[in-house]
Image 1: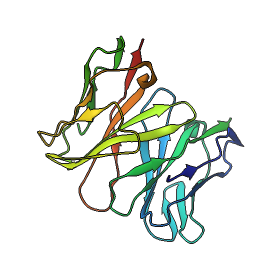
Image 2: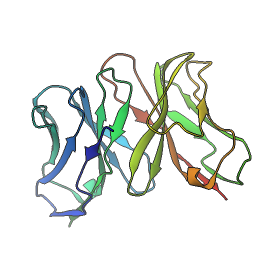
Image 3: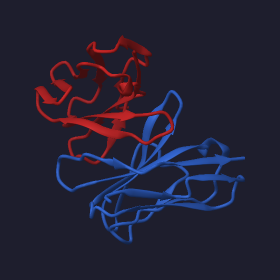
Image 4: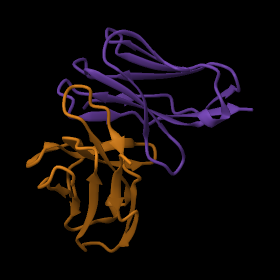
Amino acid sequence: QKEVEQNSGPLSVPEGAIASLNCTYSDRVSQSFFWYRQYSGKSPELIMSIYSNGDKEDGRFTAQLNKASQYVSLLIRDSQPSDSATYLCAVGDNYGQNFVFGPGTRLSVLP
Amino acid sequence: EAQVTQNPRYLITVTGKKLTVTCSQNMNHEYMSWYRQDPGLGLRQIYYSMNVEVTDKGDVPEGYKVSRKEKRNFPLILESPSPNQTSLYFCASGRAGGNREQYFGPGTRLTVT
């Protein structure tokens, strides 16, 4: 059974701080990794994708992947109240067909 | 506007009454998928399709059927719904190739009594 684990939170950070979200996965052959943001009552929205070890930056967001440790993280710099949402980590199999999502981490950015 | 649409958005039905939730995308994506989202369990994949007439089971396919007769449409069929299928359902689509970034529809909230 493939598993993706995340701390459920809530993770509370003050406005302007760095929020750090973590995710671990069980299937060693996983090839693709994604972070989605989901506001309450809305559908998931893609933030970042990462496929190789290291860091990938896009604006205020940085995704980090360590396949040896089976660990993915998302850093949000200069956190804003509008970043308050649930962040879902998703892991794709080696064919890019089957995806397993973590339960999500609820982030609260306090003004 | 590039989008994934689902209908209906809300549905209340009774046990055993067949229903279909439609999903359509206008991005010419080859890949489409259905998920259900339940509190504490996250999103779980029900079925996916790599292209027309190509479908496969995800992690929780029991009690569901799908078909992919046209590239843009991927309906989810519950032939005999049961209360444990009460959930929030999302359809998603993505391009062919390895970078399977998925774009989600607005969701369908289904209640089976």
